Length: 457
Image (cartoon, rainbow, N blue to C red; front, side, top):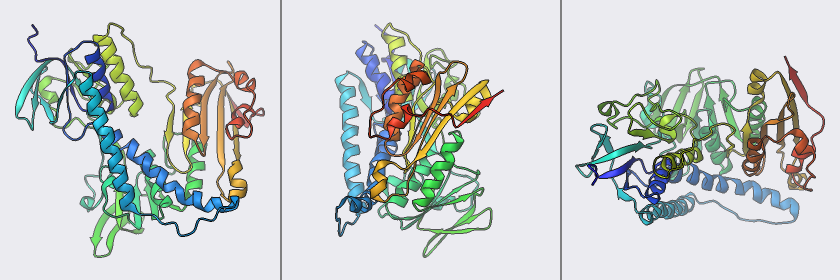
């Protein structure tokens, strides 16, 4: 009989932790999991899923306007924030129940409590005021939004945690940040009709994405009503009877009903008792792990955003699955963190996989760039000003396609399929040999023949 209560104890009921616990239990492990907030984690409860529902809501006004070019008459349409939030909450509650049900069906023991390590095998369940022991511990607590702790008036701002639960939609909102969360919510609120401003310290939002993509998206969002204040930050924020006033480092005064901070996220390691167990952290508070997701403590592992490797939900799921298969399933494997397709659900949408043009120039001797910008077919009589961008990066030495970048409708859907091709090592010749699907926007990917530019060393 084991000297421990469980073979595996998972701290954190998000996507990565839930996958690990479920698969481990299906492999025969005595697995348990605890979550102090709600099962489903950031992605399901207050992240990717509710955000995507709000993205859908924000795109209907443009659809209504464009429909007139196709002969439709849509009179008297109106938006109700409370209805959106209520329906969103119902869907999130359904998904949370599904997460718990799937764990229970797999035989996992569930707890609803925050947890703290007392040593490398002992976990204190804080709300339950009890301890349990486990042979192996997996930490999957994710991340939490950053707020500038030195900012005067920071107590008046909201983050991505609170934005999903506002009683009223703000008529004016200022969003601080330049990453995908900031840009997505700027598109959401602008689409819903709010006066929307995005303030970012850098010269161009979406640092780390392809530069041509960054400029294209910002230009399109500006035409959609988003006001950009670049190269500045907030100096202080004050609350008045009429709302909030943000004073910028450049002397601007930004009035708003809500100010949202989306300036990045940090690993959620505070209060976990990692020091008591001897677990090493990195400079940003992330749990340091090896390729097997093992920490410096032999029986303690970590997956997902808390490790600050690639902070995407499908990556956390993949890491959790690899851990469970390797530890309990007798089929060890490692997660390949290269060439991961991703999307930014701005309007217009971004879908991307592989290297950016800037990255390719740094690591390759010869880079061929194919780039095309055009109005999608729907816009021709729908009246939209939007333009799509499609871009392929090719290794001149091998003809392999090493990067694909799309801005426009359904870009994320296309990027998922392009991810397969990039992962397989498809060449430009393979793209050229593929007959176009007409009429479609995606056919541009297989009809670009003339390079836009070439970089050689």
